[in-house]
Length: 210
Image (cartoon, rainbow, N blue to C red; front, top):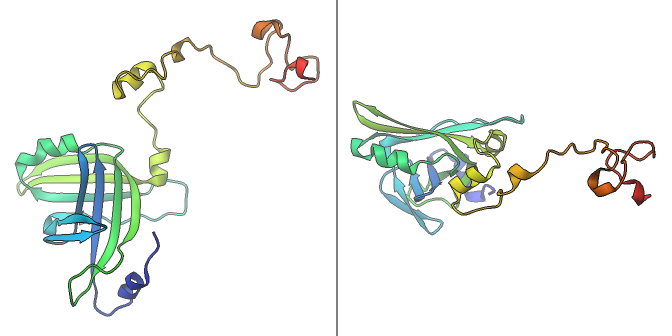
């Protein structure tokens, strides 16, 4: 998403009212909130103000191929929501963070907020303090999400644990180990003869294809 002329003009104005908007696509549904009070409608959706309880950390910019991170959070919430928050937050959920401006005269959102960050939930944490419950979510940008090692394995048991009845990896355990590009023993592969030995062919190329 590009920065609109109206958005750029606000960054150059003497008086401006910035805010951040956060969208979390959780398994239980999409959550939308912004760093303000009340409710606002944008992109045909309602965004709920987090007031003084919400924050968006500094966005880490990098030109290197490494993970960039961002923290978002809600603090001082009612203690009764702790269990619900832990159930709702899911590692790998999509995170969108927009930066926008309110019109200082009308309070309306200046068209359009700019998508400043897209990534994945990495480490959600819920803790209790004297003021209530704090929810802190560390997010990885797109590069970080791709570089992160997955905890899942390409096995039938792991796949069925995530998607009951999915047998796509059913025969993985029966598949022989293959050394791609290595010469094959004489008489292997159904009697097709040696591959890449004395014929001058590169490894993995069948003599019969000459």
